[in-house]
Length: 204
Image 1 (cartoon, rainbow, N blue to C red):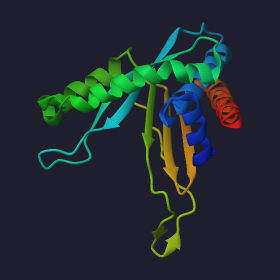
Image 2: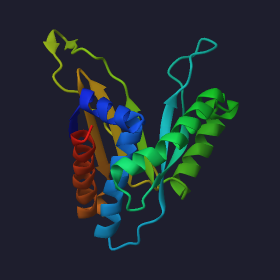
Image 3: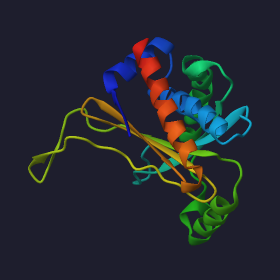
């Protein structure tokens, strides 16, 4: 887990004219470059990442999410430039996802089966990334203070890397989870992503 100061991450994002999510994706992209190198594989031009967005509450329904695909550029441009390249795309695609209603069939058993089959065979998405805005103040659980919160990334089907960022009481915690087959390449990805975060925050 990578633990960051939320205020510093916010300042870095503001200085770059991007969102905190762009900072996360850009740093993860830097880590992905290192992972491909550790695997002895060619670095692709982009890494497609599925990013969920919370949908506006409507017709009595809440906690519905859609997703958009962020194509993280993997050129050797550094995390700051990568974040600026991402920002226009993520801004437009997130707004588009929020403006479109979920297809009716995704709420049906048949739709769920179709999605499971797609996830098990798809070759479109290479990374699952999510971010959650948590409470600004610390909370109590059964009378005891909750000192730290982190989100557990998920791996599904053919996707081998997941990233989850959550803010809580002034901290931004970013967790990376990778499939066992990536072994040391996954560790290299996490270490490089952490260094990219540090570089961005140091120059905010």
